[in-house]
Length: 106
Image (cartoon, rainbow, N blue to C red; front, top):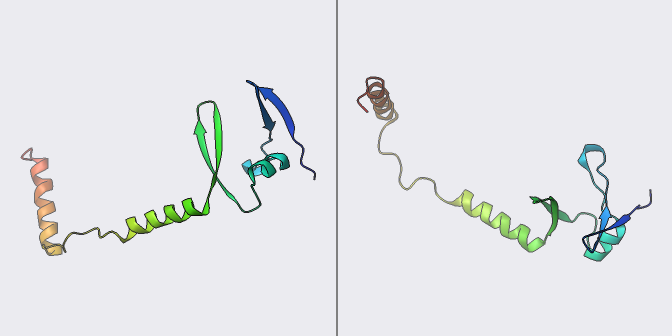
């Protein structure tokens, strides 16, 4: 199927009309893909903006930066030190706090 691009003038700018297909898929007209050097497999970030949707190419560098940030978060220690209370002591402490809350002694 050949690309079918309809161009409309809006606020002094040319805009391509695209149609939403099955499963929400859209096809960018070939002229736009050529103009923006978008090729099959490129990733685009979609953002809701006032009055519409903004598609922005995600570069390899941005993707690597995002994964590095995710890895940093995952690798960050979550405990400053190991728990000092035994599981039994923790359970007793929780039980006591719940009892104080029930009786209004929080």
